Length: 193
Image 1 (spheres, helix red, strand yellow):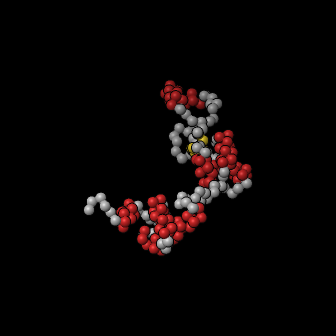
Image 2: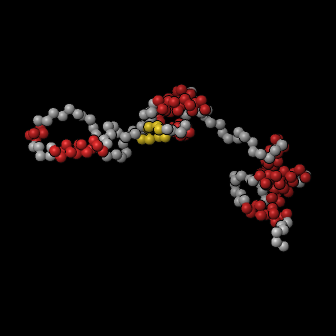
Image 3: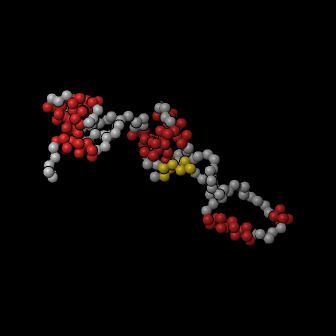
């Protein structure tokens, strides 16, 4: 018989469509079936056996239905965050103001300012939540392509100078230039919005 299914076939097809493992959410259709059978007076064990669910799952759904009168999921069941919206605004302001500070420096500031124990990972998550991005800063001064080109042309122009002539040159600039970039020392972080 095409197009007709018995109650058992419907139940099995519904369960076969939804693969349920440990901790996976139960579809609202099954919640309704559990509540309907409970209201008809069927025991929790029989409901669990007929729907191929654990008895604790059925018990929890029925208990939630008894308490609230609905089968919807209750709000506020997750862990409360350490930093609330006001704290996040203050953290964002501090990060933008002191944009060259390291995460460790920001963490020590946050612990003193908020009077809470905060880890570096918590601050990293909060910074990402504030829609700021973390970058490792380059060593300064940074040479762009124009400066590199000018340095190259200057060196090429003075290529034929003798050692005696080089000794007469007065060098006034003592800054260190990093031309190649790799893993460079301390992790200073920049923030961009």
